[in-house]
Image (cartoon, rainbow, N blue to C red; front, top):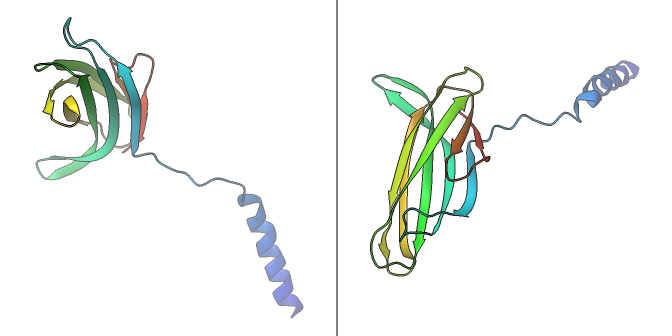
Length: 145
């Protein structure tokens, strides 16, 4: 029985120091809150943004990617408004980067007013990706693909 106690004590002694170490957690989704925007002299409103890890298929190969979406609320307006936001991304693990424009056109939604939604998917490769959008200066979204 003393041999069992010795083995148990050794196992506890070797395991105990590792109990405080937090588990690694990869964020696959990030979002930015609504901010006021002026799309044109007659179109204002607010826009929010989100980024989400998404697989991208190129021919027979699936690679890591990030889907970036904007939600444009033009408020109460008698027509259609368009908002274009520049999105850029950088893969912190590989150094790759890229970007593109995302344009949301508001359409009437009887209950919610004039809203628009648009998204695009970037082929970023695997790793931690930082995404920025021009509507939120100084803010960034970080996701792991």
